[in-house]
Length: 238
Image 1 (cartoon, rainbow, N blue to C red):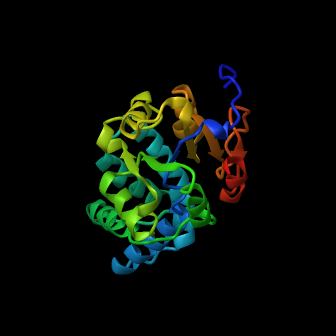
Image 2: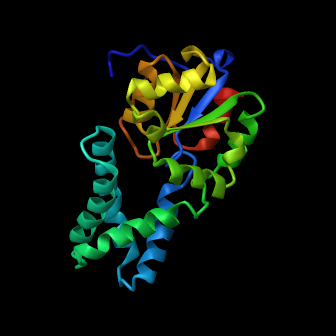
């Protein structure tokens, strides 16, 4: 981290704001728990939901990191994170039914609309002054459904997904592509996201400004403003 120059937000330069979606605007934890509850009920699996989700979250995070680094593909991610979680809580389930659970999870996940507290008020305020966009590593079709079903799709001019670009955050190419399709220059761009590695480090390397929505208690740094609630962002930009 010490190789970076400390950056604060220079709001007078910003024209375009890029948001991450999951864990930043769309309440992944809440929607994911509701989805698993629905799937397990349909599959008649008597699982303690809280225990499952508690085990699932770090396992899912680790597999997403491997996915970002191109060490695994989508299918492996979707299957293995479930298999490992069942093993972690000592719940016996036949491997043959895990793909069905995984498919149902992906199908239902985007139907739940819950947003992080403060999302709508922040977007309503920012859209009056900035062009708003999404940059996400999430799966193309699923992310568009999340945006539509949660009611926030109209706020965004461009939705840039890793599948669409062929590169995942923090790869420079996805940020370069975002600038190209929006017509913004790097010093006019601001990235807001929850992952230091994917969102903050990746965008800063490309000359973006950034705000770290640090809800996962990641390491404190001085590279950009750090907030722990969306309500803290508006005063920095308006």
